[in-house]
Amino acid sequence: MAADTGAAVWTGGCLCGHVRYRTTGTPLRPHYCHCRMCQQATGGPFAALVGFDRGSFEWTGAEPKRYRSSSLAQRGFCGECGTPLTYEREGAAHVSVTIPSLDRPDAIPPQAHWGVESRLSWPKIDDGLPGERTEDVAPSTPS
Image 1 (cartoon, rainbow, N blue to C red):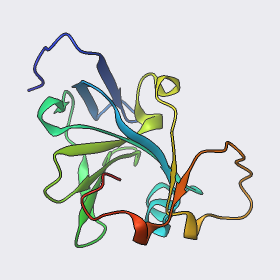
Image 2 (cartoon, rainbow, N blue to C red; image 1 turned 135 degrees about the vertical axis):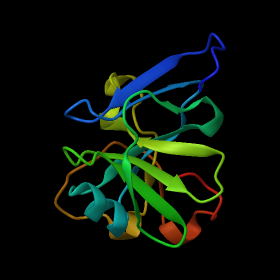
Image 3 (cartoon, one colour; image 1 turned 90 degrees about the vertical axis):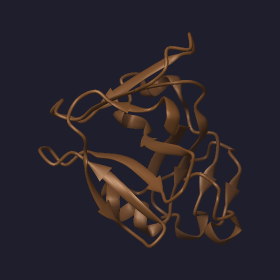
Image 4 (tube, rainbow, N blue to C red; image 1 turned 120 degrees about the vertical axis):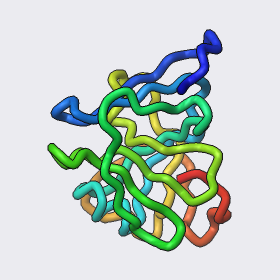
């Protein structure tokens, strides 16, 4: 259960409304991830993700179904409508949600690009944000 700390409250969920979440606190490292796994998991040219402290995160609707996408992480999605919702790294103190699944996605713009070695050539994003290669990101870094 998320503690009521007086901090910002963030809510979100899937397209059909079956899976819903609530969290409080400061968004952690909002970013675009261009890695091949994120491209395939979202069906798009990149994922837009932001982390929140696991201790403040709660499911308020049904919990998502999860798919183990690697030995390091699993991804949550709605089993009814298929919306990609989370990236959860094993042992991490945070859970990352897809920014578009937030009820107010425009309030948390990405601040960096990750997995730039897999960045596709056709999306023209000239935002000047810093980029990191996947191998340059420490294993404990939130995705």
